[in-house]
Image 1 (tube, helix red, strand yellow):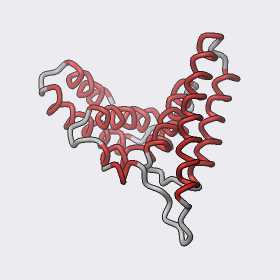
Image 2 (spheres, rainbow, N blue to C red):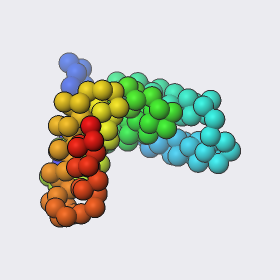
Image 3 (spheres, rainbow, N blue to C red):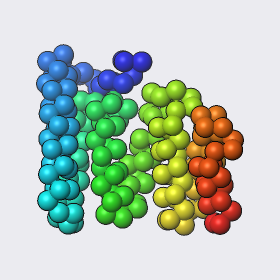
Length: 170
């Protein structure tokens, strides 16, 4: 699965090994920079300006990495996940949904069938769809989360009851 996790763009003229190596180095550096910036800005103050700056770091790095890496590449997924988190924090539901939709298919491919990481993403997507008044997509996503969680946690787990209650309330 390593090949799928580190997939590069399929271009007529594929990037050289050196270009890929440089982009991996860049990706690792920007992820570390993001972690430091996130830690510093969250401790300093949770105002909108630092959060927008964090989102800009994500978007700029995604643009740069996207020239070499496929969206299913783990470095791309990491930055999309961070961008989704910032969007959720600033209540940009459409932005968060957009990132989540890009993340879910590769997550389903990279993680085992009953991974709680995949269930968590379906849960987030379901709640975003519901918040954006797309009940059909929301119900479908929440049911996918429940199906995974029932295997991982067991059918009687409180999380599952909570999600089923959400479905009834909508």
